[in-house]
Amino acid sequence: MDRISGTARPRLAPHVRLVFNAARQQHALLSPETVLVLNATGAAIVQLCDSNRTIAEISAELRGQFDQVADGDVQSFVAALVTKHSMEVSHG
Image 1 (tube, rainbow, N blue to C red):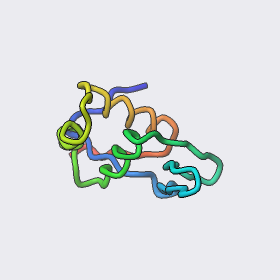
Image 2 (image 1 turned 180 degrees about the horizontal axis):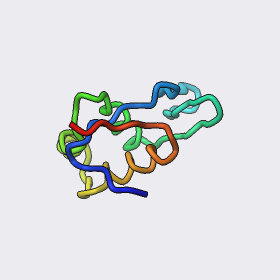
Image 3 (image 1 turned 60 degrees about the vertical axis):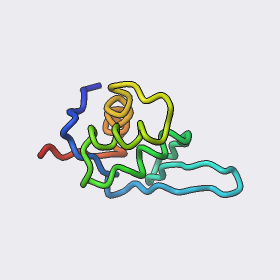
């Protein structure tokens, strides 16, 4: 898995959408052939991935919401979603 730059601007891939299942109280990413269930932190990251914010800006915003956001956590999470074709990044 490649490392994502702090200046990259992530967004969901066009065929993926974030949904919330009220009965199960959980978020998931839906694509034509895949369902990825997210924890609260993962959902918070995805909600901030709007192609306007950089990875560094997303990390800074999450540090204000959660107690533990280690350097590289957001990059690793986004890189994993890119590998699964659920997210795209632009550089610049």
